[in-house]
Image: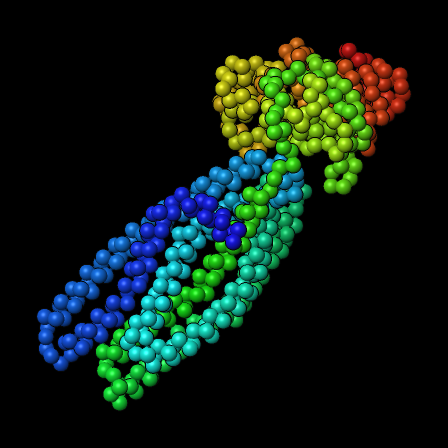
Length: 579
C-alpha cells in the first residue's frame, strides 16, 4: 500500500482529469463489444436477403464508432502521458531536494550508482505505471467482464464452459505474480551495482590508466554485467514457467469455441451469426488473459522501484537544527571544543578533544594520516555530530544554530577539491554568486591564482573540465582557496590546501591571508611544518587525541612528535618561525 501511496501523492493533483480519462477509455474498451454484435447482426439481417443498403448502413455504424472511439482513445492516452510526465518531473525535483537535505552519513553508505538509478530508471518505471499500466489493467478488466456478461446473454452454455477455465488462469497468474517479485528486486539491485561500477570507472579513468588497470576494470565490469544478465535470465525462467500456460489458455478457448460452435451450427442449435458473435467475444476474453502477465510484470517493476524511492524519501538526516534556532546571522568565530569524542563506523576517531580558538586566531593541526585532523574540522561544520562532549561557536552550542546559517559563516577548502564544469569565475563565485568580477579577481590574487588564470585564453571565462580536468593540482587548490576566501567567513578551514604548491607560493598565500582575512578564525590542516609555523596555536594529533599543543617555539622546546617532524622536514634548512 505504501508504494501506491507514493504514486497517489503525486497523482492526486491531476485526479479529476486522470479519472475522467480512465472512465472514458475504459468505457470505450467495453463498447468494443458492439463490433462482434454488429457483425452478427449484419449476417442475420443481410445473409440471403440481398439487402445491400443494410450492409452500407451497418458499415457506416461500424466506421463511425471506430473513428469516434479512436479519437477519444488518442486524447485519453495523451492525458495519461502528460500527467505521467508531470508526475515524473515533480518526483525528481522532490528527490533532488531530499538529496540536498541529507547529510554525509547517507552518502557514506549509499553508492552514487544507486542514487542515479533511483533518479532515472526507477522514476521512469513510476511514470510508465501511471501512463500505461493503470489504464491498461482497468481496460483489460473492463473488456473481460463485458465480454463475459454478453457471452452469458448470447449463450449460457458457452459462457459457463469459459467461466470454468478462468480460476485456473487466475491461479497461474497469482503464482507468477508471487514468484516474479524477487526476480525484479534482484534485477534492480544488479542494475544499480552495474551503474556504480561504470560511474566509478569513468570518474577514476585517469587512475585506471595511470596504473594500467584497464583489463582489471574491464573484468570487473564483465563480472557485474554477467550477474545482471543472470538476473535477467532468472526473470525469463519465471516467465517461461507461467506465461505460456496463461497465453495458451486463450488458444484452448478458441479451439473450444470453433469445435463446439461448429457442431452446434451443424445440428441447428444456433446459427452462423451466433457463432461469429461468440468468436468476437472470445477474442475480447483471450486478449485480457494474454495481457495478465505483462500487467503483473509492470506491477512488480513498479513495486521494486517504488520501494527504493520510498527508502530515499524515508531517509532522515542525522544532523538536524534546533526547533527554534539561535537568532544570530553573523558570527565572530570563537570555537570551543569541550571533551569531544566521535566514533565513525564503530571506530574511535576522536577522543576527549578540548581546545579554545579565539576570533581571528590561526590554529594549525598536524599529525599522521588517520589521526582525526579532517574529522575535527568536519565537526565544526556539523557534517557529523560528536558522540560525546560539546562544540560551541561564540559560546553557543552549535546544535542550537540553524544548520545552513552555521555553514554560511564557515568556508572550507577541502583536501579533495571539486570543481564544476563551468567557468573559473563561476567556480570561484560558487558560494557568493552575486559578486562582481572585480571581487572575484581580488580573492584570486589573494590565493595567488590570478596570474595563471589571466594567462589562459579566456581568462576568468575559461571553462574548466569536469572535476577540474585540465588544471594542475596546485591550480585547482588555489581556485578552491579563492572560492573559500570569497565568502569572507567568520571561520576558515583549509584542509591541506597548499600541499600542491611550492613553498614560495605557500608563503605568499599565507601572507595575503594575514593581510586580508585576519578577522577570520582559521584552521589549517597540514602535513608540512611550513604551513603552520606561524599559527597562534598548533594542535598535534595522533590516534584521535591531541598529544601536544602550543606555538611553534613551544613545541620545538618540548622535543616531542612535532620536533621530530620539524627535524625531518626542515632541519637541514634551519627554518625559523617567522621567516
